[in-house]
Length: 338
Ligand code: 13P
Image 1: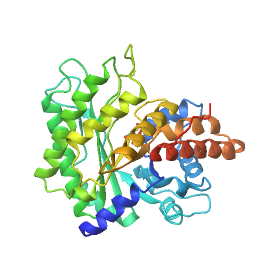
Image 2 (image 1 turned 180 degrees about the vertical axis):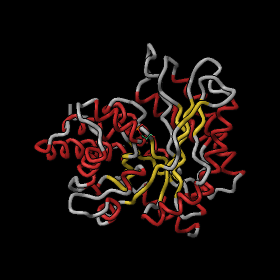
Image 3 (image 1 turned 90 degrees about the vertical axis):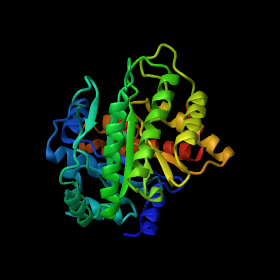
Image 4 (image 1 turned 45 degrees about the vertical axis):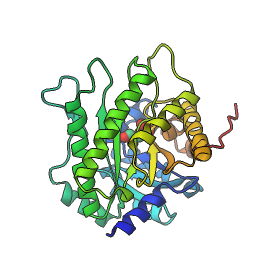
C-alpha cells in the first residue's frame, strides 16, 4: 500500500456530507447497551442489531465507513452476505477496532493504558484479508487533580504511534483516537489544557515513529465542559476553543478529524459539530471535520428497536434521522427541527 493509496482511503473516510459509524462496541459494552433496552445480549441479537444498522436505506449518503468489532466483521446478514460485502456493495468502507481495551496503568493510580500491541501485526494482516481498510485504537485520558499525568499522556501517545506504524505497514489507515474523557466537574478550560497537552504528545510520537500523516484520521474529543460541571460552555465556545486547540496542535497534513460523541446528548453532539463546521466554512481550515459517533448515532434507534422485529423499520428511520442531522452538522448547515 502506497502513501497515495492510504491518503485516498483517509480522504474517502472524511468525504463531504459523510461521517463514520462507530459500531465497534466490545461484547461487554454492547451487552450493557442491549440490556439498557431490555434485550438479552447474545451473538445473534448483536448480529441483528448491526444488520439493522447496515441495512438502513441510503446508508451510504451519510456514512463513509463503519468501525466493527472482531465478532461483527466475521458476521453476515440473514441471507448469508458478509457484513463486509454488504457494506462494500454500498460503497461503505469496513474498519476494525484493534485495541484490547484500557487497563490500569502500572505506577499511576486511576490512570489507564490501552493494550493490544503484542501480535498486532498479524491481526492487522488477517483483518486486511477480511476486507478492513482502516483500524481504530482508543486511548483514554481522565481529567482530575494532577491528572492526566505526563506519564499517562506519553505512554498512551507512544502506543498510538506503534499502532499507527503497524497499520500503515499492513495497508490500513489508522484512526488515532486519544479521548479526553468528558466525565467530571471540570471546566472547558481544563479540557482545553489537557486536550492540548495530549494532542501535542500524540503528534510528537507520530513524528518520531515516521507516521505518514496524510494516511491517518484523527478521532479526538471536542473541547468541552465536564459532564457534571456546574456551568457548561455554550456550543459557540466549544467550537471556538476546539478549533483553536487544533490549530495549535494538529498538522495541516492530516486529512481529517472525525469526532467521537463521548456521551454528549444527541442534540448536543450535532449542535457542537455544526458550530465547529460553521467556523471551518468561514476560516478555511486545513482538515475535513466530521463525525465518528457511536452513541450519538445509535442511542435513539436502539431505544426504538428494543429487540422487536416489528420495530425494525421505525428504528431504521430513527437512525436515518440521526444520520441526516449529523451530516448537516458536518456541513455546518444544521437547523434544529424542535
Ligand atoms: P461515542 O461516539 O459513543 O463516544 O463512541 C465513539 C467511539 O468509537 C469511542 O471509541
